[in-house]
Amino acid sequence: MEADDSVEPPVSFREQMNRVDSDLRSQASDGPWDAASDLLDWFEPYDSVLPDDHPPFDWFAGGRLNASHECLDRHLDARKNRLALRWEGELGETRRYTYLDLHREVNAIAGALRDLGVESDDVVTLYMPVLPELVASMLACARLGAPHNVVFAGLSADAVAARMERADSACLITCDGYYRRGDAINQKRRADNARMALDHDLHDTVVVERLGEPSLGENQHSYDALLSTYAGSTVDPVVRRSEDVLFQLYTSGTTGEPKRVTHTTGGYLSHVACTARSVLDVTPEDTHWCTADIGWITGHSYVVYGPLALGTTTVMYEGTPDHPDPDRIWSIIERNAVDVLYTTPTAIRSFMKWGEESPAGYDLSSLRLLGTVGKPIDPAAWQWYYTHVGNEDCPIVDTWWQTETGGILVTTLPGTDAMKPGSAGPSLPGIDVAVVDADGQELPPGERGMLAVRTPWPGMARELADASEWGASASGEEWSYLPGDEAVVDADGYITLLGRVDDGLTVDGQRIGTTEVERAIVSVKGVAEAAVIGVDCQLMTGVHAYVSPTLRTDVEPLRDAVHAAIEDAFGPDLALDQIVFTPDLPKTRSGKIMRRLLVAIATGQGYGDTSALRNPEIVGELERSDGSET
Ligand code: WTA
Image (cartoon, rainbow, N blue to C red):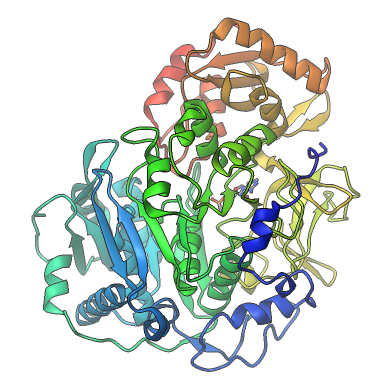
């Protein structure tokens, strides 16, 4: 599918953008990564950017550094009183930490953890929502050279226990509870259940007080009490090799076993610092808000490590952007004078549902740049974001990447590249991304195939750098990684993502991406969101669409309009066999639509554990409504 007409970068942005034009696209192939490492303050310089062109890929071999030093200590001379964190709680409370405040807290917690027996390379599990203490704990672990293992706060006790088992993690930092959509959630109880489910001994648990006085059992310590005991203590950052582990993270398993992804210190940090600067245009003077939860890779890379490595101010919000009211997101931008907003297409489609009056009621003029990540953004949502949030003054960067890639790989460079709504853009300089067929042969523009990353990059997971796990293959001498996305490239090298391979639809022998069908549906006025699945079982075959209408939309005329739009877009070969209207779609906590669950509902199979869902209540409703006529 061709992307829509391109949009030139707004002149108003070009005039004040921070990044110097010459620093990326114009450089030689390993140039950008050499420059990326210059953004860090190495204890010992590396010998080579990348010694070998085959696995294992040891980025910046020989270099020594510490991520906590990079994100804190080195900023103290120039900007100790500059804000590192601006946090808002769901109840409206605000907390601010300067770089000096954060440095002190990180040192105290690192001192406490060290005395609790945490050593270099011990894995510490963190199980908390978006709280400043989570950031402080991550950096305290990094200071000690102890990899952290953040588990999204909404996951179940079993999920925490399974991740701790696999990581052999014996220390847990959690909280007593937190607020979510007005309810106080008892996190401590879940953490206690996780502890009981563990096979191995859990040595110590540290508990952050968010709700009140937590009740503490044996080997359980109050975070605040540790802070006062260790106030004023300093811990020298442990010197780490570039390839030493900074953290592990399990990808949000919508089905199956969680998969461990390990990121290194030098390569990962260079990659996220470089892309935060070049793609998100972040500098120390900025206030940056990435709305992702820190429990996912986006939060690790672009709430915590990228922005703090650059010495900027990062905004964090405890709740969901539509609670207590849909205007919350805009009021946070206004109050904090946010320069850069990085969010998801799912969130943008929700904003659209609430209407353009909502952002229009706030002063959003501080915004300079907008970003999206997580799934393809359809051109209608892109235009809405560009017009009603960015006032046509802010470029949009549609950034493609994954937990496994650590940081952004495919996107336009703001202010430099023209944007094509619906298409993520070309790959970053120094990265060769192509669309290939089943044999790994590069396909010409316009032909659908698999996305392949054919050069290594600094933020690559250790598992990818080491060998050929996860689809990285060495056909002949060529190394390449298949991330599992379908895509098409245009004559300008712009890549349009068409959805995950496992979501594909086969219609009369033709493969059609669910994204394309969804795009056609959401282009219909009155449709807020849509998910499309292919159903193929004895009971039923066909293409089903789950459609969430905008508020106050009459459903019956919409049904006809959706059928008509599909016929317009794909001709008579593709007809929707069923349309189910629903107020919401089942989504993972990171906002991805859980299509497999829809398939399970449609085919009447059991759908198992729904604890990875943000809105499990929708499952019952969908079950009742599925099977209704087309
Ligand atoms: C999808 C999130 C289209 C893709 C950072 C990828 C996207 C998966 C985009 C990774 C984008 C991410 N356009 N699709 N801009 N960004 N994806 O690991 O399918 O949670 O493989 O990392 O999200 O999801 P993950």
